[in-house]
Image 1 (cartoon, rainbow, N blue to C red):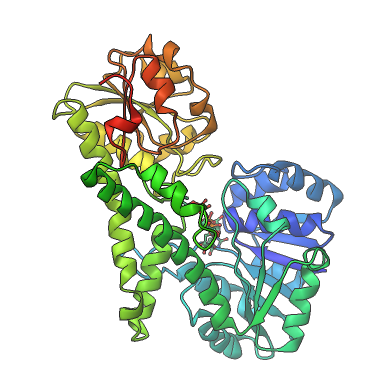
Image 2 (cartoon, rainbow, N blue to C red; image 1 turned 180 degrees about the vertical axis):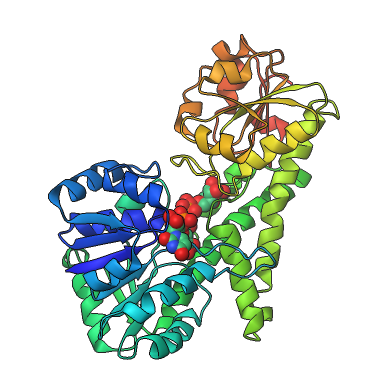
Length: 442
Ligand code: UDX
Ligand code: UDX
C-alpha cells in the first residue's frame, strides 16, 4: 500500500521504516530539510535499536523515500499518517496542537478525494473530530481516523512490529478495513485489534500513559513513606509486584519519570478533562505530577545533605543523563535536571552517559561531560547514579573507589547492588531504603 508519514521524529521515523519493512511504499515528510536529507541517505536522526538497518534496507529497496513537500505527499498517496509532535503549550498545561493543525492546513487543500488522514500523535480527546470538521471545509470527501502508537523509546522498532494491541479509531467501515490492511502482518500474528470511534482511540492512549505514570508515582510515594518509616521500598515493590493483579512492571521506585511523553501527557489530559467538565475525575493526575517532580527535589536535597549541607566547592560525578536507559533522549530528563541543580548550587559536576552526551550537551551546555566513567568520578566527593544503564551495574566498585575522593554514592534508581558497593568500602545511600538494608560502610 502507498502511504505518507508526516513528521519524522521519534514516532514518524520508526513508523515509516517499519511500514516500508512490511512491504508498503512509504514517503516520509518533514519540514526539517537537514533531517530529510539525512534520512534519505539512510541515517536515523535518533538512536534506536534496529532502526538504522530498517532505514537502510527500506531506502535501498526504493520503498522508503523522504521529502519536505506536502504537495508531493498529497499527490503520492490516499493514506497519510500524522506523526508531528504535540508538546506542552508554552503558556499552560494543555497540548500544543499547532504542528498538527499546520499539517492539516498545509495538506488539506491538496488532498485527493477519498483520502484518509490518520493521526498517530498523542492528542487531547476531541482533536480528530475537530480536524474532521476542518477537513470537511478544506477537502470534502476525505476522512480522519486516529490510530495511537504505544512505542517506548529504546524498543520502538520492536514495539511497532510486535505491538500488544492495535487501536483503530474510525468513523467508517472503509477506514477500518484500510487500517486493518496496513497492519496485515500484525493481524496475521494474532495481535488484538480494537476498532472503535476516534474519541475512544484518542483516550486509550492518554489513559494508558496516565495509568503507567500513576503506577510509578504510587511506588515513589511509597518510597517517601518508607523513608519516614525505616522500611525498604525495593522489597515492598517486589512483593507488591508479585501479586499478578498488580504486576511488577512500572513499579521501579527512584527518580521518577521524564521523557517526551508522560510528563506532558498527564498535564494535557488533566487540562482537557477540565475543559470537558470532567476535571474532578482526573484531579489525582496533578498529585501524580507533584509526586514525580518531588523525587527530583528529594534527590537533590539528599545529595546536599550527604555533602554536609552544601554543594558549593564540591565535586559530583553523575552516572546517566538520558531520561531512561536504552535511549539518547534527554527531553525532561530527571537525571539531567538533578545534575543541573547540583551545578547551579555550586558543585563541579561531571556527567557520564553512554549514549546521550550530544543531546545532553546541547540541552545543558554548562555541565562537563565525559564518555569515561572513572573520569566522571575522578576526585568526586559524591557519585550520583541517575539513569540505570546496565553498564553501571557492571562497574567494579573497588576500582571506582580508587579514583574518587570520598567513596560515597547515592543510587537514585535503586538498581545497584548495595552489598557489592558496601563491601568495596563505599557508603551506599538510596531513596526509600534504610541504612540497615543497604548496609555497607557509613
Ligand atoms: C511523537 C508524537 O507525535 C507525540 O504526540 C507523542 O506524544 C510523542 O511522540 P515525537 O515523534 O517525539 O512525537 O516528535 P518529535 O521527535 O518532536 O518530531 C516531530 C517531527 O515533526 C520533527 O522532525 C519536526 O521537524 C516535524 N514537523 C513538525 C513537521 O514535519 N511539520 C510540522 O509542521 C511540525
Ligand atoms: C512511554 C510509554 O511507555 C509508551 O507506551 C508511550 O507510547 C510513550 O511514553 P517512553 O517515554 O519511551 O514510553 O518510556 P517508558 O519506558 O514508559 O519510561 C518513561 C519514564 O518512566 C522513564 O523516565 C523511566 O525511567 C520512568 N520509569 C519507568 C520509572 O521511573 N519507573 C518505572 O518503573 C518505569
